[in-house]
Length: 138
Image 1 (tube, rainbow, N blue to C red):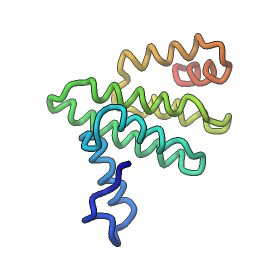
Image 2 (image 1 turned 135 degrees about the vertical axis):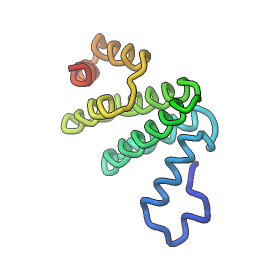
Image 3 (image 1 turned 180 degrees about the horizontal axis):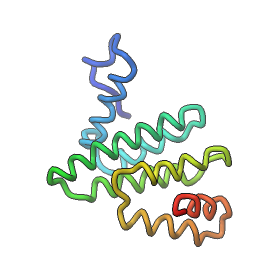
Image 4 (image 1 turned 120 degrees about the horizontal axis):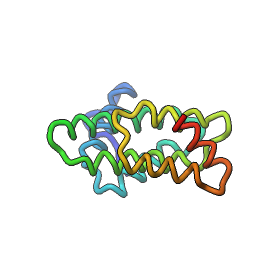
């Protein structure tokens, strides 16, 4: 779906490719909010690479936040943050639940919609969701 430009892929170090992907995601060069959300969801879907996916997601959030501070609208940041939290909501093991709270805590800004999202987790009928919501809000 999204890859670094051909000038960076051949014989480049992994972090340079990651930075190129992060920059493209934050500029939404890959498409609309749905594509960015799907890419972030894919990054955190595999247990083996979930922490790295969260780190990528936070890097994207910081890039988008920097663009927002320079005059871009907050909608892009809000959508990316909610997509990352939504992707993490389901599929975390008990040992990984701290990743959800870390994502909320280390984000540069927590939009109102994310607070509503976390509140809805606290009111959920699913015990895992309640645990995630309370853990992030404590």
